[in-house]
Length: 385
Ligand code: GAF
Image: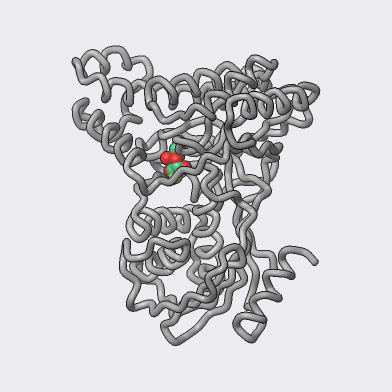
């Protein structure tokens, strides 16, 4: 039985009637542009084939019922009028936060029965939470005929995550899940959400992009992500700009000089400004057909996240170092950091040897075995039936 039919059948078992529809929203992997999104900068994610699926029906009695096939916790029943930011520390905060954000923005959502399941690995830096948010937002947008555009849904989902869940994340993950297209990476300007779909078909050029999930779990609601964000905001304030995006790469040295001896802020600023530059380099290289040349840019991105932003982890560094020593074209950590996943760009013919080297290196270091899979740029959120 297909996953779509299964989620619809489980809905019937749980709630006693067929759902009004089934929707899907993917996780994402970020090719380049890390910790730039809350600095109004550039990012370049693409959607994974891994999906959150939601079977959903409307209700008109102010009740929200939530169930996940992946968590053994029964049906959670909430009253819409009782939804209070930061009151829920469970997975239910993501879908409930979306309903809260829609209602807070004035949309007349009167309730829902929702059954969810997801194949996006949780805590792996692959946006499992954004996939949950976006699938619910899209379903309610369709069912309640709210007429919101994809980027507006992404903004509402970010608000759900920032205010309701209490994680100070940027807009990249929700936009990726909502707006990515199959066979493309999404070049996104997070200041105005303008977008360009960049064709990204590595297989056609004899290459692969591997995701290596280190199985080291991370969370964005803990302090380190917020500290980096606050440090970037301090840097922008000291430099007299709205956001670090406003510091041109050519002006970086002068800006660093103006920051004087605040070494931590200098490092954060240097990462963000050079990372925006790297995104633009990758876009230019892909558009000119020089795909292999993005490898060194990915490597430089990892060094910057490790040394300047200081959010890597021994497991992530080991993936990158081992993959490069085994002939990878490029590699870097991806996502929020402190665990999660790394990506490896490699010739198709080298994939097997690189994978084995990474697995052996993890075993030798006594780390949990990583999960390695090929990332194929896939479609964004959609209604399935
Ligand atoms: C996490 C956040 F959710 C994103 O907004 C982004 O900041 C990313 O970390 C780092 O680039 O995925």
